[in-house]
Image: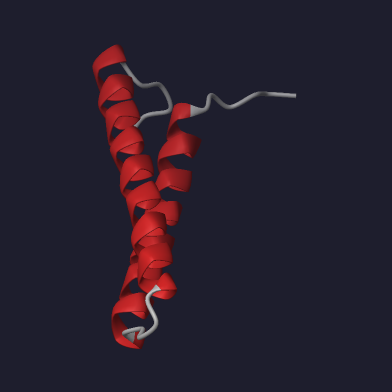
Length: 72
């Protein structure tokens, strides 16, 4: 991908980032709900946390693409 994004690419990346942010918030809620229940499924909890980390990494990548480089 080139250094410069056109408006369509920027909009698509922004939409994807917002979708991932929402999924990340939903996973937070699911993890909290699972943790608040007396009996926790550790495997499910680990999978949710791993998915959250994958989302965080993808969000960081997208935000890096969307943030213009500043030449000092």
